[in-house]
Amino acid sequence: MHHYTIRRTGYLLLTLVFASLFTFIVVNAIPGEPAEILTKHLFVGLEEAAPLEMVAEISERCDLNRPLLEQYLAWVGGILHGDLGHSYLFNRPVTALLKNALPPTLLLAATAVALALLIGLPLGVYAALYQDGISDWIIRLASVFAISMPSFWIAVMLILVFSIWLKVTPVAGYGGVGFLILPAFALALHSAASITRIMRTSLLETMEKPFITFARAKGLSMRRIIINHTLRNALLPVLTVVGMSFGGLLAGTVVIETIFAWPGLGSMLLQAISARDVVLIQSTIMVIVFMFLVVNFAVDLLYHAIDPRITYE
Amino acid sequence: MSEGFPMERVRRWSSRIRDEVWYSRLMQRPSLVASFLLIGLVLVLSVCAPVIAPQDPNATDLYNKNQGLSPDHPFGTDYLGRDLFSRTICGLQTTMSVALSTIVLTFVVGTAVGCYSAYLGGWVDEAIARVIDVFLAFPTIILALALITLVGSGILNMILILVVAQWAPFARLVRGQVLSEKNQDYVLSAKSAGLPGWWIVTRHILPNAIMPVLVFATLDIGHTILTISTLSFLGLGIPPSVPEWGAMINAGLDYMRIAPLNVIVPGLAITAVTLVFNVAGEGLRDFMVPGAESGVTL
Image 1: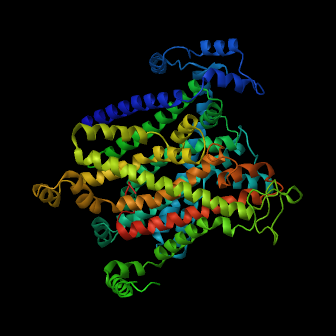
Image 2: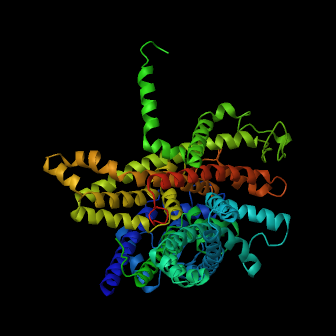
Image 3: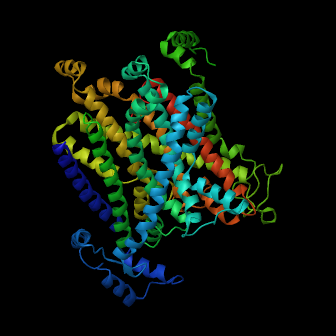
């Protein structure tokens, strides 16, 4: 267990270092002088070349004149010191921007995960209990449908039905629970469907195991067998799916937050990309990658703690 | 039909296929057969899209913009009066050509890297495995967004970006498959017979290892279609002159109140096509790799 944790931590750090290098190279290889693109972006309608002194000032303030390797090391050093540089799009420190954008995204993602579990677990158990019945059939059909719908379209349809036709929810924005429902649901639906399916399959598979036959032979009631014996064993694959779908959730925030004008990491990343704000792009991507890796790492360790026979590799 | 057409041979083949075990197993799964027929239909529709479309998908008609359902425009018209039915059908061609090219290229790259890495072993394999890990650390859309800023939008760039963003899971799957096969006795005997490595990999290991990868590829087509439409919805994928479903939904957002068909129709099209590939992929998985349903890799 101990060795395993140490090795996995090593891999995690190694992956983070290479991911940061990769992100830095990709983002900084964007053609064009970043400062010039940005000046044009800040002053829309500036068709001719941007004023040289303005470009120079932005380059100076955002440290864009130094050699790339030096910039990379400064960035990584900055990550360790909590100083990620200066966003020229918002003219504010990146750290402050991330600090503002992180809570809304975490709120949205956590609500979506909770919603996905609340929908997925009961539906999966229900479908498994009534295997091959009409409700099982409907649940399976609905989950395949849900997986096949793009999440941005789910969001648009939710706005159309609940905000425009029924007028029960606000269209977009950030604030009370009313603003949270639609984006969280649009984000959760894919994961909910995956959880439903894996819960159903895993429960059915566990029911076939010899120890369940033994419990039945002992004369235990079906209810006790399912609650005490089956569910706990069947939840393992569900854990993996929850961990894996977290990556999809984080990626989904980019489009969902943009649609609902949610002031989180995803919508900020998209703004940064359209303005070519390299300093902001690289740090936002790394925060997303970091969260993704850490969640998967935690799921992995948890998995290993629950069932020590299973290791990564 | 020319005189030399080997009719007799075709008859022999078809009777031999009917005697095969997999044929009777396949016929016991009507949903799998039906979904593959539907894939065939989707492919035919996408190839024939320009012929089927009743009107030019880019012909504007400002007197008839944002119309509802009518005999002239079975799905209505968009904000420029373009026929939504024609645009949706042509959008199928755009999506399918990008998605299929992406999957074929991803499959080739992933299989080549996975095989090379696993069969060679040693530090090369270790290094490639770490590279795969780094690529897996990025959610697909995030990686695609970063790459789009680098190479810009456009159909060829889109395919390139999607291949770079998706090859890693393929390579990981192939690597795992080859690793579990390469110490089998038949590989050992092929080696002791003095066969070259590339021959052993392509002729002996791959046929035994490739099935789960093919299933994964089929399932991944649906995922790719969703990614394509998401990127276009964000205005970052395919140029606006080409009809594409995600871009159509984005353009329809402003007119959602008066012309909801603009956002409903392309979304239904995305869902339908993705659904067909998902059902086919899952059917294929249950058919080819029994017991894999709860597996994490698939």
